[in-house]
Image (cartoon, rainbow, N blue to C red; front, side):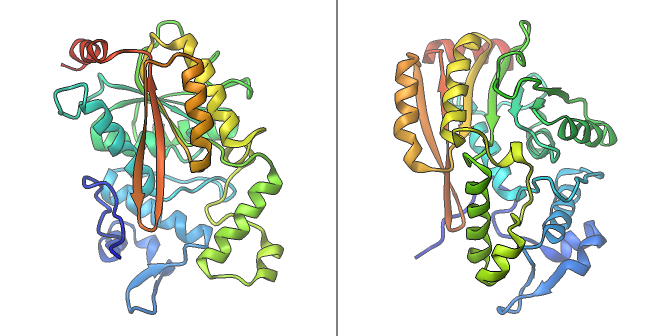
Length: 313
């Protein structure tokens, strides 16, 4: 069976070009090995290997010359994150005569940007969008600001001081956003996050069960706020939907990744409870994994087209 691929515009659709990446970032070379298929690869169960790969990708494809995060912070795979951005661009293009809107006039709000700042970095490079990014962790905000500053990127990076809130006390009265995005904490507790860690190790076929229990470390790292929250991703998204009502006139599309397909029924019910004008689920195929995000808006089709004409033309 043919394996599903990334978005057609995703520059990583054909896999990793290691000779190119090593040339872009020679620091990657010590982490590159030869697979059983006699192909260059890295150990995806190793934090440092993944971080060096990300550095090379950001330098080689996105013109990000400085990027670094502490070892304990989430180090996400760039190709999958970029896929979300391309599907968001398609969503916005539907309101814009099938043309993807580009340029700094388009405003994006990234909820939970993390220390890695991946969405603003790659989204600005790919589409020149302007990003406002937020996080509940002061250290993540500090590191994200440093990354933006060192790359001369004028992002607005904000600390959400109340961890119970998402949009509330973050979106200011004069803010207007064309779209929001979010990769929510998936788990409901540290125990559940640790079980997820064990599954990742087993799937990577790198550690025995005994070694998994001893190390108990997610291969992509991650702090508490990045991995879990009370109620898990479902409660997080429900809170996001409830809070979006207050800011319905300040944002065209709200969106959020959903890792667990079984949560969709409850999410759809939450949309209906808030009288959302339109909502949809957009599937994304990434190798053997199928992921998705939900999008919702308080504007009807004519209002959305008027929004696009007034702001993006």
